[in-house]
Length: 45
Figure 1 (cartoon, rainbow, N blue to C red):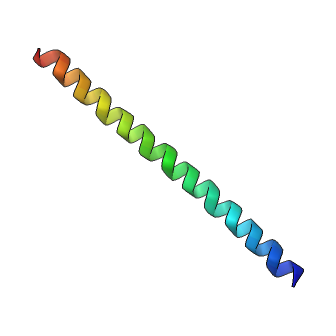
Figure 2: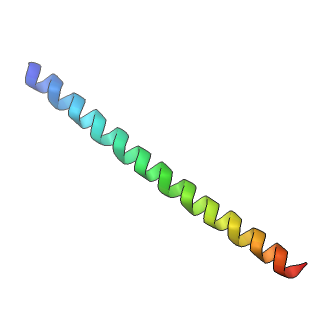
């Protein structure tokens, strides 16, 4: 029984780490897009 609980805890940790990585990647991509838009506006003006 304890093994199952330990396995579940490990599984939760792995999922949390994957979610964090995904969120970081999304934030990076969003920042890149914002930078591109800002640069376009700068060059257009």
